[in-house]
Figure 1 (cartoon, rainbow, N blue to C red):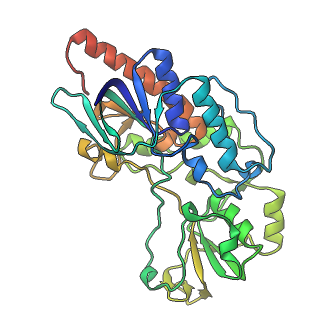
Figure 2 (cartoon, rainbow, N blue to C red; figure 1 turned 45 degrees about the vertical axis):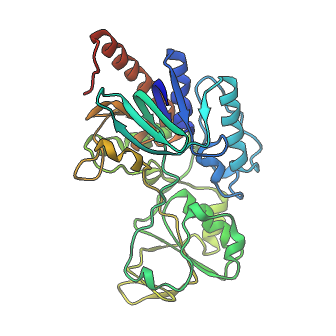
Figure 3 (tube, one colour; figure 1 turned 120 degrees about the vertical axis):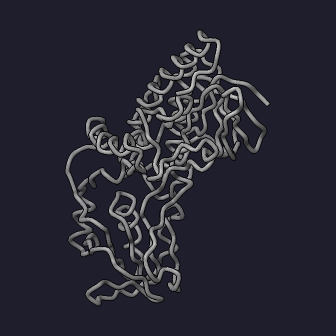
Length: 356
């Protein structure tokens, strides 16, 4: 058992940014990461995802990201940058360590139970992201489908889709990227989305990223489950997409209403045969380990004040809601550490725990 000021859970962009600012603030801390190596969720991306098709990787604080060649695999390029960042700043990242639960002790410290023992902390920064919780919406008949229903979290390249009839579900960048890849080898592809996709020209820069982040802030302030930043980000229009549309690949159909054993159907009776339904339907926040703290509202979300949980000043969620992006995570890590330092200073001055 170890005692620290702050435990950080997760060593992706949000966790590393937080650790950098904790180090600068002189707060005793540890970073617990479930992954076997540096890189956060990026080390699990599909091997065919190239830097040319990544929306944008923004710098971690204090260290510029020099973009590698456009054809470099993202699942090696970004983890290499994260590893170099950890090394340069001497961050204390313990891995692989899986956190099973976080609970409150009688003295109002936090008990962090893990696969490698327990930690006591005065505050917590949760930066577990979403990758471990892929979301598959339910549609009637899903259990009757005789084919394969992978999620993009399971995607490892187009080879497994060779000669198959595939329905791709989802209106985000991942859906479009995988659609364009597998269309080269499939027997047929059908693209369905709940809302018509919006394509835009121009770079996905920091200004655009901040605008996307702002769109999800109101939901978390109200305690509603957050929409992902990706869900409110338009699709970049590229020459490859223009070519795909001309070939009849990038043609969107509305969402089907039912899944049948051998395909999908719409309310008007239209039917599309399918061997595979690929769910590119996003992720949900990985927060089950925080359940003992009872942070959720009846609506299923967590009321937030910036990065701080409104009901418990000890807990900060970085990489949740509006900070669930590379641009949002950096700012959120700095803000969380500032508030935690003020909380701990107030607690020390009062000689007693301070909990909102």
